[in-house]
Length: 405
Image (tube, rainbow, N blue to C red):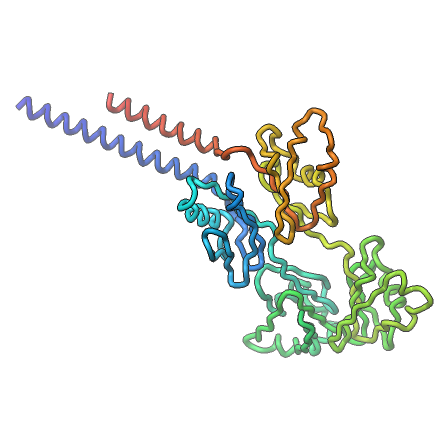
C-alpha cells in the first residue's frame, strides 16, 4: 500500500515537472518569436520592373552585383540564373538569394538595396489646378488619375471636349473628357511614362512652370513670347530653364522653344513662337533633382536628394559620417555608377591623424544616381537580439533547475 502511494506521488511529481518544462519551452518560443518580430522591418519598398537593385554578399566580391529589373519582373544573377523579383521586398529578395547561395557558400550574408527606383512620370498642363510633372509607381496610370493628381480641371475655363494626349512616341489623340465623365462605367484611357496631357482653355493662353505668376490669360489674338512671359511675371530667376521651354498647341502639336540668351538678340522674339488662343507655354526647372545613395557602415544610410554632382566628402557628410573608422573596411569601399559600373576606392587615408594626399579622395565626384558603399570588416552581428536570446535561455535553465531540484 505504501509502495503504491509512493509510486503515485512520483508520477504526479514527474507530471508536474514535465508540465512546468512545457510551459517554459512555450514561453521561450513565444519570447524569441516576439524578439524576431520586433527586429523585422515594416513598410519596406516593393521591387518593381525598371528598378536598379544592388545585391551585396559580404566578403564575396564575385557574388556582388548591381542589376536592373526587366519589364517581365526578372533579373539575371550570376550563379543562380533568372530570378522573379517584382512584388518582393528587399528583405524577401535577400532571403531568396541567401537560400540559393547556400549551395555555393557557407552562411552567406546578403544585403539588397534599391539603388535607383523606376521613374514613371507624366506631364499634365493647361486648364488644371496644379499643372506640373507627376511621378507614379505603377506601370501605367489612367487619364482620370493623372488629372486628379493635378488637382482636377478648371471647369469654368477648360475646354473638356478637346483634351489632348501626346504620347511619348510623338503620336497625339483627342479625348472628349465631358463624354468620358458622363459614361457609365468610365472608359479607361491609359497613360504611359513620358506622355503629356493638355487641357486647353476657352480663348485663353496658358503660361505654367517656373514663372512668377503661372496662370491662364485671356486673349482673342496671338501673343508673342515676350507678352506671354510678361503676363506671367517673367521666369523665376536661377531656376527657370528657358532653353528647354515647351509650347503645346491647341492642335496637340508640341514645339520645343529655345528661349536662351541668343533668342532675345536682334528682336527675334517679336514674331517667333507666337502663342494662339488655346496654346500653352511651359517653362521647366533647370535642375533635375535625383538622389545619391550612401549605403553600409555609415551613421544614416539612405538616399539623399541633390541637384548637381557632389564630392565624396559631401556624400559622407549627408550620411552623418562613417560609423567607426577603425571597424570600417575602408580599403574596399566602392562607388556604383548610375550606368551600373563599379569603382573600388581606398579610403584608408582617413584613419591617419594628419592625412596626406587627400586630393586623391577629395577629387572623387558622385553624380545623381550614383551610390557609395562602405562596409564593416567581418560579419555584422545583431548583439541586442543575441543577448536577448541568451537571457531567455538562461531564464529557462534556472526555471528547469529549480523545478528538478
